[in-house]
Image (cartoon, rainbow, N blue to C red):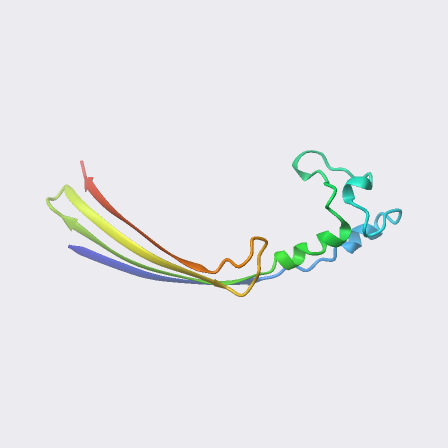
Length: 123
């Protein structure tokens, strides 16, 4: 029997600071509350402006883009060879995600269990 284990730790911190009001200064005919779709500055396709998209609302993006989290992963596994070619493998993992940030979708703290059992044959 072969046993294996691992521990993974990941810490990430990043931020993006940019004032979208600077974009509005490029177009002085539009004030900061004008929806981008009404400015005549239109981008086609997936990047098209929509009515709720104002210069002020765009300023919230840099807050949503702040990133700070810690992630832990603990894994235990085993492989048992019945014969030289026929074997079984089991593995279980426990993951923890911790963050003090409120992302676009809210608080994303949490933990998860996962695992599998496999039977294999080498030929």
